[in-house]
Length: 378
Ligand SMILES: O=P(O)(O)OC[C@H]1O[C@H](O[C@H]2O[C@H](CO)[C@@H](O)[C@H](O)[C@H]2O)[C@H](O)[C@@H](O)[C@@H]1O
Image 1 (cartoon, helix red, strand yellow):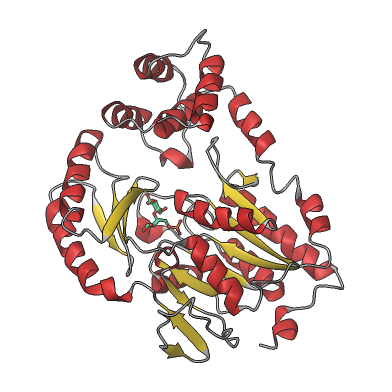
Image 2 (cartoon, rainbow, N blue to C red):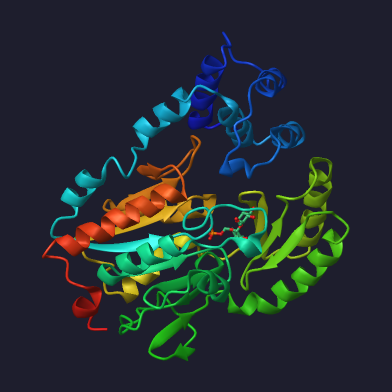
């Protein structure tokens, strides 16, 4: 099934690549292969032929579009996408004007947002500059990192004490040191494991034994595939293939599928050169955002503007929540056109840094923005 966005992008691509009418994948591949390759984060610096080969054997159109757009020397496709998803940097003054008299809560994804995408997931370090910017922002606004990584691991990378952490795509939240709003049954699975005055919320706890078992099986199954690695993200699992040879991708996918099919309560989805396996519960980054707003006492207020910056498909769940609330700033980080629910865009983590610096500077300069410690009494 091709979505309207994909149809439009296909039309634009055909136009940009000089095709008179819609072309087949094969024709695109030939055209794309002969054009100059522009290395970019989205493709992880991989040879585009790898993506194209995958597209042929397992054709998600989005990949074809990613590959094609990243090779085009004509930036017109990206530019027309940015018209629909304006740069958050260019829109900063307008956003700030809309935020006047309202409370902003900041939510940040980690990989590809605060840190650049790199080959080795264990080396996805955040720069000191980025850390300082997040620290500064968190002085003025409640700030949370919502990542697909394990919570402890993302905290090790971020190393900040004044932000909240939600790991495993929101399935592991260490909630704010604020009184949790009276439970109305909505969060009946809350684990009352306390750490200081913070409350631990782990809605997928019962799946831990199955996840550990699955990790052992996945490691065993993928051991012989050069470059593949399995990452334990506590309540979910990542199987990385960024460093896998193109001819091994299909076999890796088959192996992963063969393991996951024995766990009917789990499903897998594709991230950036990663297969992410999660329990099939109704809980995602969007729910985590709502949960955090709730624990911050900011869920029902009309004067709250959640700002969420993320780069991957799982961040779309959070964008959707902001869209549904009708207020807030969903910002996608992408250097290529993407189908998204986000209203704004930033090109890459360096633009995220500039945006956060600007936000921090603005908060510091406005008399109405008092440091968070005074506002929340923490
Ligand atoms: O929600 P996020 O914080 O964005 O986490 C999503 C996945 O990010 C990591 O993988 C991605 O970044 C790696 C390091 O740059 C890169 O090597 C990999 O190809 C990307 O998919 C993380 O390692 C995964 O576990 C997360 O699911």
